Picture (cartoon, rainbow, N blue to C red):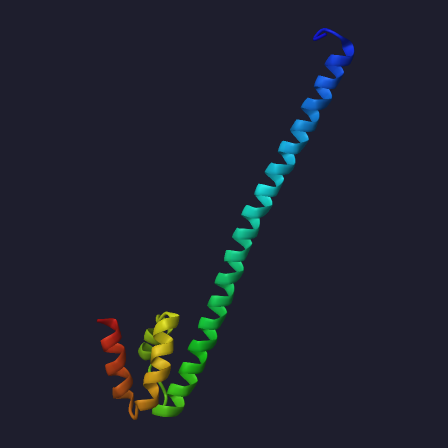
Amino acid sequence: MRESVIYQEMREEAREEAREEIRQEIRQEIRQEVRQEVWEEVRQEVRRGVQEEARSLILRLLTRKVGKLPNLTKSQIEALNLAQLEDLGEALLDFTTLADLDEWLTQVSQ
């Protein structure tokens, strides 16, 4: 039976079907990996956008609250992460002078 032409053809068809099933499974796994990578990239892009918007708003509010900001102060603010920017957004409501901002930045950097 194993030597018959029909058996050999059926065996080859089964092998091709198995190969195709495995290819499909691998494609599906690759698609899932790519989706996860793209999801993470998009999430990071959105987070960067939110952080940039927060930074821009904080700088505008601080300028309005305490006046023109020195470049060093701007650089310090630009180095803050999103959570720190959120904290600064709340803290700036109590600032009356540039010294208040400088003191806050000093505390954060410690």
